[in-house]
Amino acid sequence: MTDNNADASILLPVLRQIPLFSNLDESLHHEIIQHIVLMYYPTDYVIFKEKDEGDALYIVKKGNVQIFHEPKEEGDLPKNIAEITNGGFFGEMALVSDNPRNASAKALVDSEVFILSKDDFKKLLDSNATLAEQVSAAIVDRTNENLS
Image 1 (spheres, rainbow, N blue to C red):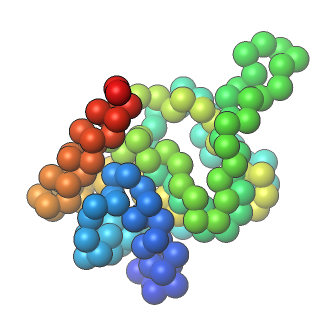
Image 2 (cartoon, rainbow, N blue to C red):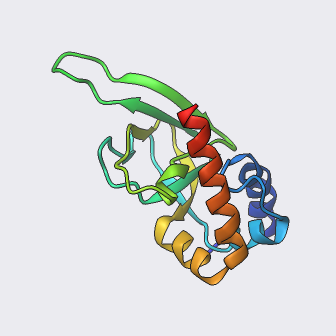
């Protein structure tokens, strides 16, 4: 688990940008950080594929991750959606949704990526009513924004 100050200094500003966590106070952010692990992905490693189960939030510590749609037909090229670099995040809705991944993710260069698993996130919510309430409110806000 991550608890050194260097990682916290990287993760705190990112957690504030993630809609699910933006309204949380710093003590809740620190609690979340305690459950984040750091993984290393070599160049061209596929982190997850479109239609995989969404099981984690990812935050790029160092590197470059491509988010893309798989080619629809043989001979087609993948359709690039985004490139996530240092301090960027992706996959956050997997923490609160049971929908499959709507895109694939691949490391374009050797990358260090923080991961918060859905299981750890659920344990956090179960043990912290304030966090659960605030995340629920953020989900409702985000859903309403997506509908309007």
